[in-house]
Image 1: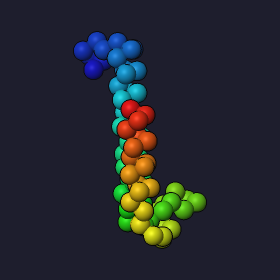
Image 2 (image 1 turned 90 degrees about the vertical axis):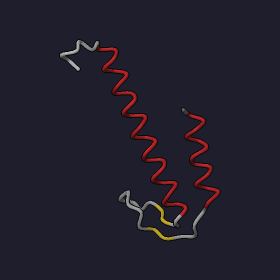
Image 3 (image 1 turned 60 degrees about the vertical axis):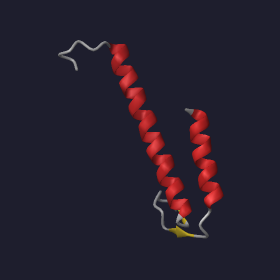
Length: 68
């Protein structure tokens, strides 16, 4: 891309797009685990077990859609 003379603004947009994509993947991972009844522990792992919560997962994804 540097050889193709991408501007700093274009690189900034690529960085922003990557960050948005990473955030979406994180949100989707959380939602899918909530559907399975797995929740995040203090270490950021999905080791806490609970009741699967389809509504909570749907609400998480709706929030993501609203923020895009």
